[in-house]
Figure 1 (cartoon, one colour):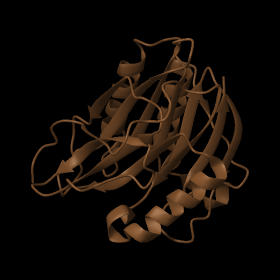
Figure 2 (cartoon, rainbow, N blue to C red):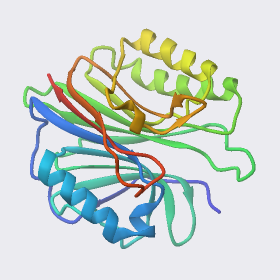
Figure 3 (cartoon, helix red, strand yellow):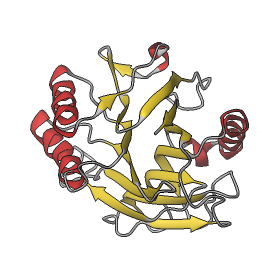
Length: 248
């Protein structure tokens, strides 16, 4: 077992677009390593959802990466930030887009999970609208089996990153592991401090929960959310995808 090192970037072809359009769709999903457990099913789902929704950004958690990994959509580049890096493969968060990434940075938890001692990783990716206004998308898989103090420290890492970008449009999406009231209060304080809104889902029964608390969230600011839906993925993963449409 090795401590995660660098962000891995792969690109089977150049992204189709240089700039983020004024309206775009994002999908966030904890895929439970299904991209390698059952790659055909994963690839089919991604291709099907892309045909119907023209998704521009995929924020995937619990993805597995090897040297032969490729995203199912040919004009999408992907960045991968590991939380667990082994000699032949790694696990972590993966952000894929057919829009050129200007910059990407890993935000690695300072503490490790109980028992297996693995870190948790988030990935901040920067893009531009045509007028060169930045868009920051942070793909999150938050620490799980630790107390509220440790959870607060990790959320503060995200705050520390974003406080230097006070007016930039931001989306933070992923598995926040906010499974109790204390963690949810910390998320609320985090949103208030940064002027973030939390996306609401009319079909929230599809979102994975623990003790009635949804684990997967999407937070945003300086954007309009015109669609937010949780998709029943028919048990492909133990989580369901969240699909959102934004306009600026």
